[in-house]
Length: 214
Image 1 (cartoon, rainbow, N blue to C red):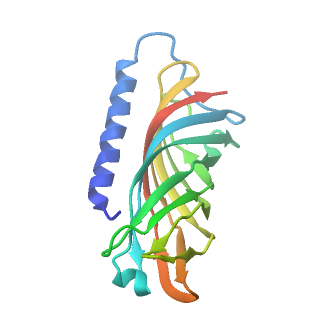
Image 2: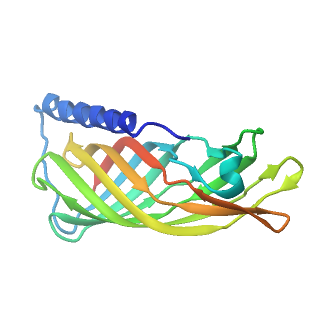
């Protein structure tokens, strides 16, 4: 669903500010900061998936849009060097498609994403990071119809992914996390053998959660 980028970025900034404040409030106790080569970071986030939809052909004429979704996300980061990590992101979601003539049905989205990350301040408790990588998206369990006519979609796509986030360590091996990703994914649709046009979904993904260092 189309939303202003400014509101997404402002929400992410508020999350980052909140986690930084949490780090300041956690100044007492036995807290050891830092990550190092060989560490494994496991995060569990709640994510808001906000598609930035662009539809072409008949899909554009019909005003096809894709609804937001809130789902859990699990990711694993292996630190190759003190500052460099590789992250695998795993999540799945289901989205409803809408149009000017009513609902078109739902589709499942499975978008495993691999990112190469650079972590700033790796030895500190507040650790911002940036990442870039590749996304593979698989569309499944679709129940799409235009009226009584079944609609078929292209099953998969590859696209780039970008990321910015921050980890704030609050205990020896425990940290909180805020994260913003942009993922490029697309499909196309047809009905009765007729091409209905392309559909770019390209979601912004805003997440907040907790993580463990192993």
